[in-house]
Image (cartoon, rainbow, N blue to C red; front, side, top):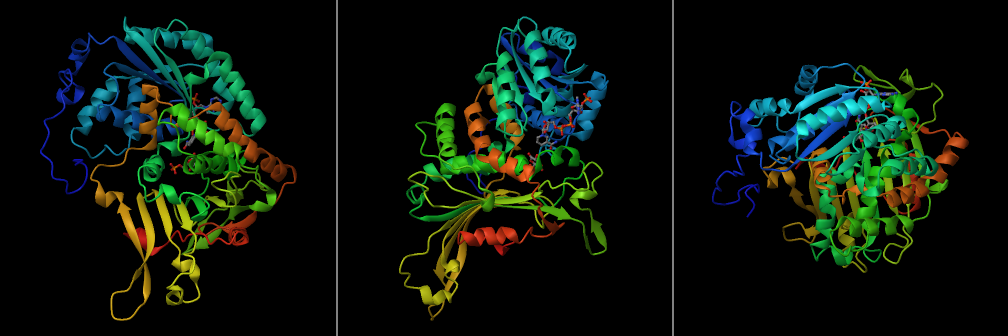
Length: 533
Ligand SMILES: NC(=O)C1=CN([C@@H]2O[C@H](COP(=O)(O)OP(=O)(O)OC[C@H]3O[C@@H](n4cnc5c(N)ncnc54)[C@H](OP(=O)(O)O)[C@@H]3O)[C@@H](O)[C@H]2O)C=CC1
Ligand SMILES: O=C1O[C@H](COP(=O)(O)O)[C@@H](O)[C@H](O)[C@H]1O
């Protein structure tokens, strides 16, 4: 049994020692680490481009530290921050240690491990379009790499308009590198089919597809990864996974805060590009794909592309858009989207969208896949809901009153927060009469496992270092994803279609309910009592 499973009875295993792994040595001994590992012949240099930025501080450095703490990074590695801001190594380390909040914080030896980690972090200031500055960076990287095989990972944590400048300069400066060079590219990958294709063409001037790791951090979330395990390793689910048993699938993203601080970026993208075209569509593709030949990256990505190509582009009549407006509650006034100074007062950018999508293949013909994504709503959640058909000729119909919907089974995958999987079933209320109730069979991760769930960025960074592409987006997937959304986005923007306003902190536009009703669907209740388990 897994020792991380709560109440598991296992003999305690001896601590893992691998050639004097960092967790087994004290800080004083750390300087000797290079000696211990001299025999190892390769090293990984990770350059975080845009190291002074929000994502680097919030996600990338914490994820790298968590990987270091867990002994997941290669023995020889160096981390370089790169940005225009002037900083010394010490200042970068100070920034990293101050902003570093992650799941490791309260762990044993955290401070010691942090000191060790920071000694591996350096900074180089430079322009994003200067080959000379990247050559200077290359020289510094080489000093750390020594005579070992040098592998380089660049994380582009910068605005997309400078991706190509960086890739051009970085690829020129790394031409003499004798190991692999990989580039993690953050979203947005363009804003429509044309710009995305242009970005891909640009990247491919300097890189081959296998070097490009397009990140969608939702693919690194524990319960999204578990989706295939749930389906393909449980015989009770896979046979039900089709139009024959499934009535509709709901993919829901809800945040209880607005675009505060990111209004400028958000206004030129909107919620459809920010969440639906990538995070929710990726989940849909994973959910709906056919069984892949194997768990190899290409086999999984082949199946995902097939699903995306089996779908019709979104139709305006199957979409509802909304924008949050200011709302006062309990004496506090929450700002509307257009109250942000970086957002034009007459902006029609949606901060909420609901959409119905269909997959035209034998498995899913006619099944609505409903997506809903919104900012400044009443709750923060991401979940997948699978509603099953009514039981035909249900013998117990009368026991549910007139609301037959209450009698249908539902599988709820609660991606975040508070990861859980629920299966709603019907059961008899104990006692002499015959009355039915609905209950949840639950897998509540916090109750079941003592180990914290790694952040999505940890998993994805590790995969990129290890060359595992399964959770990264291939260019043909991206093309197929944009083909579905580009005509709709163009129509919305050309016609300047006004979003339905909804108060900050509400459940969003009522139009979303009409859209669901059109397909005989009722949105799952995000505030349902069972989440409090
Ligand atoms: N922040 C988040 O939560 C998320 C971000 N992303 C994506 O990750 C990437 C980085 O995001 P984030 O850290 O928020 O971005 P920032 O706006 O914080 O930019 C990162 C760094 O890039 C440099 N920079 C910013 N604007 C410009 C510009 N116009 N021209 C040149 N350099 C600039 C700055 O560094 P300096 O001035 O020192 O050079 C800045 O510190 C973006 O592509 C974003 O879309 C994706 C998901 C979530
Ligand atoms: O990509 C993005 O994701 C975040 C939400 O990520 P989560 O892991 O916190 O759920 C979202 O806030 C942001 O707008 C979007 O760009």
